[in-house]
Image 1 (cartoon, rainbow, N blue to C red):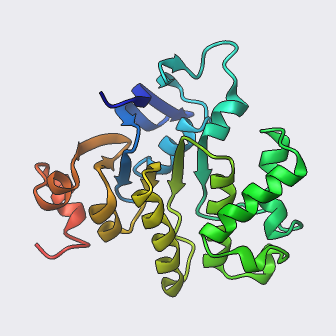
Image 2: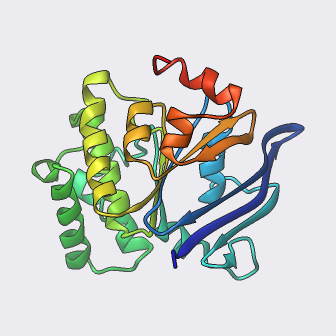
Image 3: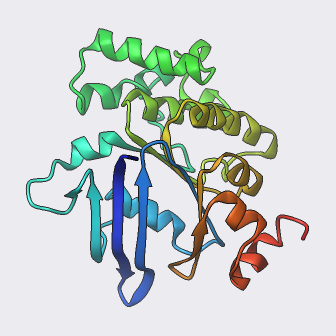
Length: 246
């Protein structure tokens, strides 16, 4: 039986009177690669930020291994360590080296000693091809390299799920491929991922599930074949027609 990691039910988010998410339901099982697609402003990034509690949901429930993450006494820092996030703007500490960026969370949240944290950081930096740059500051490396460091930093926390919030949207076109290649490797290794992306070919080719959002609701979800090849909703068809010849 597939292990359910996250179960999201009736999730809504309002900013003032503006409804950004409305009655969202979906489940994430171990090994799933879920791509969330849709136009800008459809609520995709807000959904990720609610899952990671960077935004507080207005109503609804997020269950992590059956436990409500909004319940009293729930260990939110430990949860965030297990549900990591990679941001579109990298969010690296500009005054720290690449190596230190990948060690800070391990030291502060996981309470690892320096030697253990450094060993783990170097392992994941090597995995994303950034080990030669451990002494560089973020300003000294390219956007694609920064995002690979951000991925290594998230992996160094050894998360159960990794959330990607449009990880290539801030990159020059020639740098997109190097980040997608790293993500494809993680897919092959079985990492559970939720990816908000505008890279439709990537979403079609690597996802186990795809979710199309519009106006703060899930308009359609299913396998990549159901969504990208045979969508049933007209809104989904119109959105995908911008990316694929039909």
